[in-house]
Length: 103
Image (cartoon, rainbow, N blue to C red; front, side, top):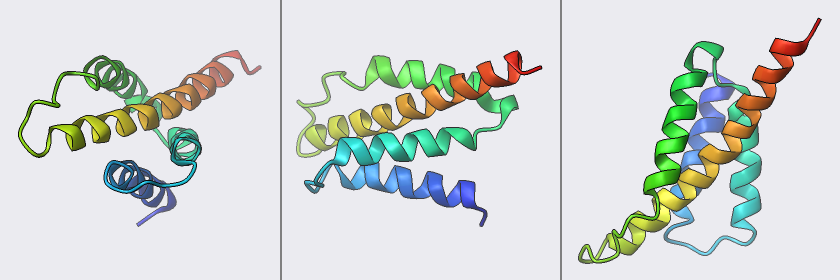
């Protein structure tokens, strides 16, 4: 397993665990992991990733709360994953701009 897969796996696991356990400074941890994970997204997959990030940002607040037993957890997981993807998208956009503007 290479470094990019390990970082992505740890980032997703932290985002999921944060839905069940109170992690101190979880937002900062998720943001930093997202920023680092975004660096390893290949240029060919950047457009699909950005579309996925937009879709996740739109649906993470969907009213899943009424689903019996797991609704609150699903909403929290999607919220954490959305924060992770948004941070990674910032890096993808920054790297894309750098590659486009470098001499």
